[in-house]
Amino acid sequence: MSDQALPTGVATGVGSLPGIDIGEAVRTVFGELPDWPYLPELPARGLGSDMIGRGAALLEGLPVQWWASGWQIADLPGRDARRAADFLERDLDALHEVADTTDGPVRLTAVGPWTLAANLWRRTGGAMIADHGAAADIAASLTEGLRNLATAAQARLPGARLSIQLDEPTLPAALAGRVNTESGLDFYRRAPVEVARDRLRQVVDGVGVPVVVHCCAPDVPLRLLAESGVRAVSLDLTLLDLDDVPAVDAVGEYLDGAYSDGASSNSGGELIAGVVPATGAPGPDLAEPAADLLTGLWNRLGLDPERLPEQVSVSTTCGMAGASPDYARAAMEASREAARRLHG
Image (cartoon, rainbow, N blue to C red; front, side, top):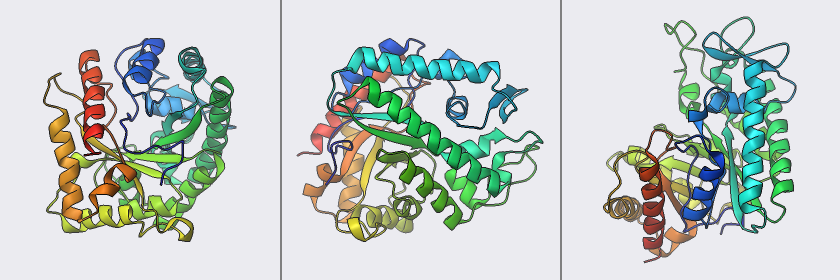
């Protein structure tokens, strides 16, 4: 069901880790999550390694700078934008040093176009999401930047099967008109579903590698993501109320392929199931409840158990920047064990 860039029935991760040593972080990920490793983010390094700064530094033709308390469009790249680009270059070099001979799947991560547009300010004030034309510019510029990122990573890992994960925690709020304005007293107008879908489709079609979308917020728009051509969706399943029939049905329809286009309507959607807590204390009891949560959902949906390892991989619920290093390793180990249990 999955291609070589998007394995199933394995453990993976979703983004950030604690610490400031990118070499150590990459070694940890490739050691603990060998079946589907990824390039981690280290926000603790400071400005420019944060999700928005990292994504803004990828933009082609749209210079940015840090101003007062946020990232904004600028005439020329600011010092902090150059720092963000330098962080990313170091990250790619660390990837090369650790895994230059890999011939398996490797996932890159970046902020998605709607979350970036909601957190990147215009020169005249207000977020880029206030102007749907400006949001279109963000999507086009980010597409080019992500294509360049994939090319740079492939040059360092010539045998790797690359994919890109777009982090879109703000997408549900953008669709519902719940993104706060600069004052915090009002909301920006909602992004129409068809506009949000088309912008995401623009990115998905343009980056040159399969795209995964991660969203750790409630009300993830699964139909929109599937219709955008996203190849897999990464969800925090601990937010899903099994008694919420419409929400559970939406997940079931996604897994059944009801939202896919004609070319893939029989295959069903691929899911990265966030079932291991992203923070906590290391312990021996992390894997069992994670696996039970997933199998409980599967049973509630009435899906064939044999399809579980064919459509699902396991991860933490979100990034682990707020976790201790010991817990991060324990969570990766628990993800591996929970993924093993998918196979019966």
